[in-house]
Length: 236
Image (cartoon, rainbow, N blue to C red):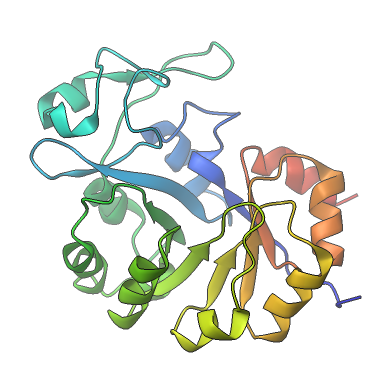
């Protein structure tokens, strides 16, 4: 069995989506006070502004705005609110630029290029121009996009769909340093990923048993909606 990594990273998935309003300014601010990397999904508003939003429409998580982000103006976005997962106070929508202003170079940011219409070169430049690329791990399910982002000079995490097992050496040779398999990744494939020199953050893990199994198998970390709770569980 692979030797467990000395450090085990808990990535705050959507800012800790089972603790705070998903992908809200309040969630990101809370995570920024910890060592947890801040994860978010990015989509484009009507004017091209990149904003944290997982779904291809606003209805599931937001109030005061509906529809696809490409049809939402920046003013409408700012006026909307994000529902709390536990019925608490609603959260405030934010933007990728605001996240870079507040946390760039200070916290590790893990943005997923969710919207296929995002200009990858412009996205990379938003990071490189600030000189904060050492504190950003860009992620995507698209291998061509992952390869392009890596070539631009970014650290990249290539997300794998459940059951996918692409050749680890091919991933590594493309300049990609991180990979994100699902929590059901097989022990054998996890070993191959680690043997290829890849950093492995599995998704999305909210229970101690699964996190411990992955850690024992050699994973370097997990994405989790409950980083505070999971950190406490793993400490015992």
